[in-house]
Image (cartoon, rainbow over all chains, first blue to last red; front, side, top):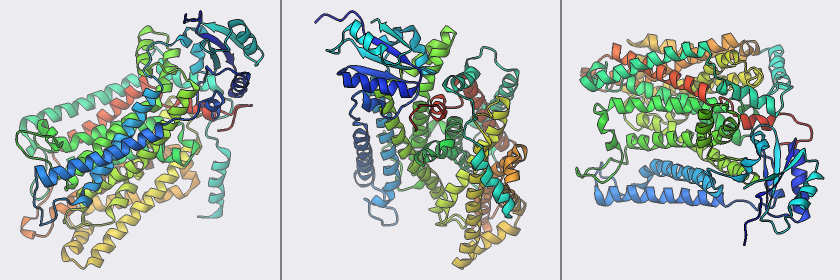
Length: 178
Length: 460
């Protein structure tokens, strides 16, 4: 399939409420390939564009369990197989004494998973993205709110989509180059 | 407290907002990012940084001399093998804890006022942990072999003993340092994107751009971002408690009189938060004056921090009482002598100075008038910082210098190199802090945007 002429059409809004209602309208209109951009998190916005939650918490749980189990295996093997030391006749597999280290590694692996998982799922680092081609987009990290309907959406039509966005109280509407 | 003053303190909560009125998204962004993006470095910054840099050079010099001569240049001896190195380690790591408390625990408790102080409190945590981490390594005598602390297969065929609290400490402190750095960096990503978009110089654009990793504020990204941030806060909260608990285990698991006490973990954690909030106040009061940030760090923040300082200070005072009670209740001659020796022995001046700083002077914080007098509060916060350092001195030195065997009693006197290393780390801490203030936004810009009152904006 030939690549569409442009990345998408982008509308700019002045406050989170306008962006949220525009996003809801666009989703109701049948657009599915769209994204909203804001200088801070807005509750309900991701859901409004059809985002159905993230599996990050599950990933972090797995990371934590992995850290816990691996630490126990490490400590158990050091104390019983690799380097057993008799300390006052106590059992070699003295698991209560392993708890502090197991706890720390649980937190460590879970935290690293949370950060790398978040970045990975978000596709960051991303050296290039077409939305930055819109010269007004620099304000998306300051005080402006953007909604972009992407050309890969089956319902996308450069003129009709732009016209639709005009009606959503957009401050400006512009095409985004690749 | 009389009812008048209580009325006043309620008044502070009701009236002082977490952000001054009249701000919107752009003014918040501009005021905080301009501090970083301005091309003219303020003269006061240069002077402050130069002093801190020179003092941190004293640290380098002291370390170089230590590597040349060995730990004999310090005052440590037998019986006092843990001198300044361990005192400073516990002091610094405790200071770091307030940063994590503000950024993680107050986030989970939905305390909106944390927003304008969490960023530099987290930076403070990182730099304090960096200073803390130096001391146990330098104290080992052969710091170039510090990697022996880590369990790894080696040709010597030996392994660290994971039943020892000293090995727990290695894991606790490295985890704490790593998680604090991750938490801080994740919090910075959206602000780095703001700096990338606002920077005018090409070099700044490039550097902030690389660090921001292409952040574009997509709704899906924000969703995962907030999930990750909350999870990190949830992980950091038990972590911060565990770290100082493990630090207190270094003492409590031994049988030295005055150390072998079950009160140690909670008492150490409270002391850490106490010292940490004192340090946050010590830093934030001059910062808000110098950078004109009274709109963002309002009297509400100052007042709340002073209250937390008072509450944790009272817990620490309770800890002192329980220590003395348990020594008496144990009926053990060495424990009872340890307390008597603290109160009346050769280090009694240190002990009474500690009581003055940590227990008596902070009672003034019951008064709303004191809490709202920033200059007075600044002095009290410094007094608390000193008091907590004296507490660690008392715990480390008075317990070790006279334990079970009177024939091995001795005295500990810090040397010039003890002091130069300690003061050097204060210089390093300040120098890192100055660099942070100049190159990164000291207040979380995107979180400030979420608390800007805006008509038609969905409530958070």
